Length: 103
Image (cartoon, rainbow, N blue to C red; front, side, top):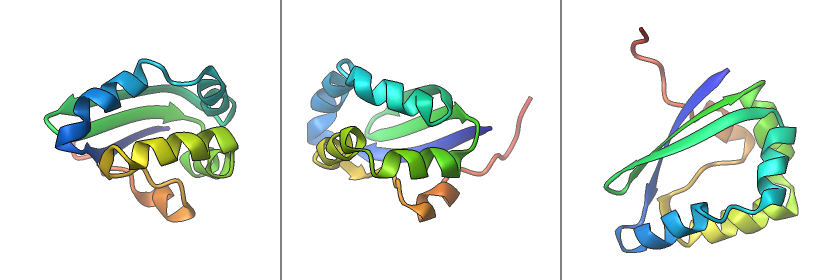
């Protein structure tokens, strides 16, 4: 399945956010893959962040990542940089952007 998400980076933290994503811990990327993700891309327009990820099941991916120490540490780091965070709770599984049109 393909999921699109919208988060927001704090205007004064854009450089730090982008720098952090140049150094995502290998343990975290391995955990994301193990949880069923095959790809995850983030685009930025000003402070708006648009994520598109491909995974087997988004709710399962979130459930598997939510309690992992490496993800908890990463999310704490991101919380310092973001105005709108990625929700790893069960409620977050319904946070994907609705598809309006596809070619």
